[in-house]
Length: 330
Image (cartoon, rainbow, N blue to C red; front, side):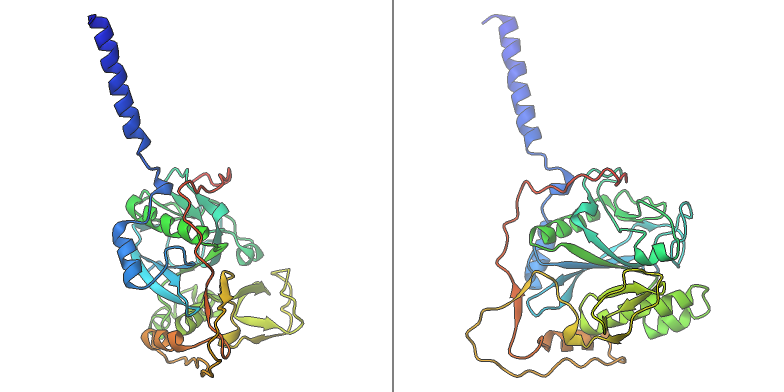
């Protein structure tokens, strides 16, 4: 065989092998949930596509993922170390202060960024209605990879891949948006006392503490509204209308009982032929420690004679991709 022909055939074969290898490369935003995390999900009897909730604690440098289960409540899945965050304890005020935000945020799939300059990211949605009511400014406030921060919460690349995959599967399963509680620290009574002299204490006590406390006691993401430039947590407006202006006076409201706190939209009443059973309602106590609250929550039901479960699982689509958002530059 002619030497030039042989060389061409060898090059063609090498190129085919190289291309075949490249075709197996999975982009970071499409990587599956790691095997170790899958094993933990199975161990905790959690579905991969169940709704999630995220809590962030600055002082402890921790990010938590909680997963919904068939009892209608969220259970702790895993705690991840935050690699880096910038600024100090307290909220973000303006562009350029390099302060990581604090507050209650919702993240939809439109806020997921598979093309991030920091490996992968999701936008917290800052400024939200509360932030805007206080004329706070800033953009591109993210949870991302690369372990570098200028106002964001930065993870290692490996951890953001796992967190991103958990969110992706929850969206695939039907969750429209997941809640993020970005908090200065675990807002226990002891920690609140320890920080009582901090200049941000009034903000924490009047706006964030109730949301932290309610979740600790109920294991349900709180219903959050904004009026009079403050957060209202788990309330029902007597006239049936939530405030549309976050700076206006709050309409008359009352605290929601635990059984009336909204559940994730993907929950549906189970079509069971079992006879109705009367079950005592969950009673919350301000003095309950988290383990006691979790145990009580898992034993509670919503109303009487009804249970809640997930709709049939939606298949995890291998080609699932989030819509690119040109505003998500990070």
